[in-house]
Image (tube, rainbow, N blue to C red; front, side):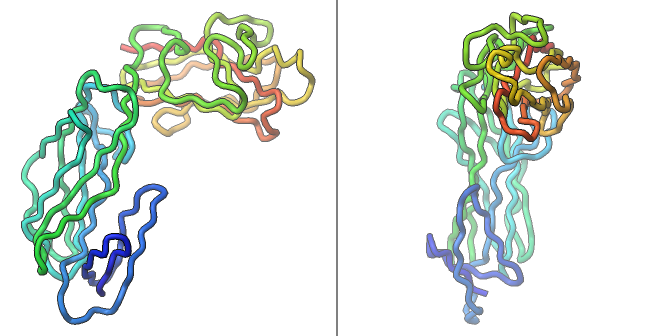
Length: 311
């Protein structure tokens, strides 16, 4: 089969399968025809860079990553030859933001046979002092095909440089910069109930620190694998009693590296629910609030006095 990329007009040849590396929210348009009998360069695909370790310890491979400035990232790039002829003199390189450095780990497979795969590995260093925010890393494979030199680019992967993780025992999580935060009404409030500047008050108890949100809400923190414990209390803020009897139910959950490690169940007004969660090894933490299935009206939800302990 001959394949023409409708965007780049690149022509290649595949034997049995047609694959395409498509970025998130992207589109790939290919024009496929029966082979002409005149061999073309092989169809070679390059996967988005995958992050496999941070500062030494391995992580579940992912295409998007939270990391602090100064981190060293292990990166793998998978290459596949779906063509009928070899990809010769194949080299893989990374494209990184200005000031970042990358170095290849070991040699690279020079010939990728038809149906064959190869994995190139790199170490990428995020410079100290890199501003907080998202950056992109991509990969390019260059090889010699039957029709001459060919280069193929990958989709990009995202590295979000996060604020440094907390340090010390029993630190107020509300005083730690978050990576991102949402609230179903207004904006997340630090050490206050959402929307009115009132102190956090749950089931008759006032708390000096905490986070006030409205469902649905997600607050994402970078904890860098160095934190061990998070304690606190959740509930509907007492201020809703001044608004009316409707609503005021929510669910609270703590999600560490994509896995729910604690869930409150449905919490109604006038009730406080305590939590004490082991975070050992977690790199990122999300504080999630849901609407308990009845909408978000009066769901002024509090994370009261959340205290985090880190090395």
